[in-house]
Length: 431
Image (cartoon, rainbow, N blue to C red; front, side):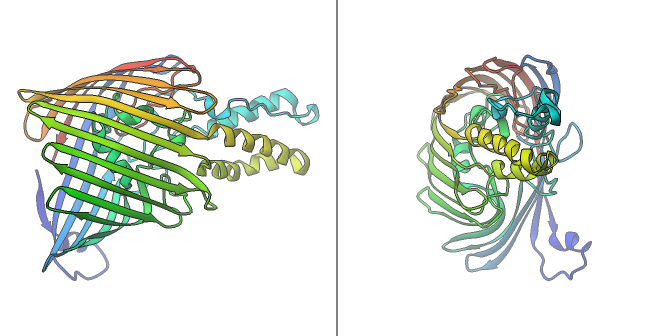
């Protein structure tokens, strides 16, 4: 259900005066379900999960038509975790990831605690690199989208926190629409889980230009200032895409470029792909390339753990910190390409969905992964559907990918090279 209200009703609770009346739409998605997963280790098999197919949300969209093709717009969209009522999430799996500290062995003299202290220090670093909360870490109210802009006859200019151009193409090419255990993004990135993300989904502090032509051609160009990028730590970032939607085609080419805190080349991604619809079929194909030579997490981890190493004194502290920096520089390196093929097939009020995803890791660890997924989505009405998905991830070498959902990353299997498999059943209501 869409509700139109006056912006003045919202502004009435604010200190400032109401200067204009705009049409405001309140909308959202309530999505939740049950997930059974086998990830090995001590991970719980059965889970209640919010946002399996789509992240649950509550949003507000506003428009003021000023005439002559000009409109003022805004969009505020908040994350909602139906299982807890909160706005933050962590990995669905409770298993520890090991890739980011692979090869790290602190050398602590006996006088400073020796092997016991080194083991505790390593455990502490592993914990710090796998936080309990990794989605909306700042607990922002409108962490999904918060933007305002102006639509003109020659395009729209938007400012705030928005989806990046490359992710827009990536999402559009995903058979499972960036959700469920079979979503393309489930095995895109490095073996460090969400900390080694394979694409910047949103960017803070950004300005974007968008245009759409009557012939189906559309484009976007985004620039992020300091503290932009995939976790708000880039010195600067930018992205662009070109899309075409007409005559059954819905395809695009996107590119994102990010930097670390000092401006060195960071997370850089390119995606090409989309879909073609014919009769009851919708066929998908996609290619995604990811590189990250200088992750922003390296400097962040160094600064966050500085007090820990300082406690060892001016002689030993810098040595231990250097050992960590060298390891993170190696293990945060991202160099991979990913491919996806799949389809939708409409049957009555439902659709069958299936895909195969391959992540080709080109780093020294060669932690490739292959993901298979099949699902069925049945529409009870125009706004409510039931869905079921079965997925399987075959990990290789250091790969620990575990099946996830739209609202939360899967996390890790119990051991490197171990497979992940599971079933998800859920309901989604759009209002």
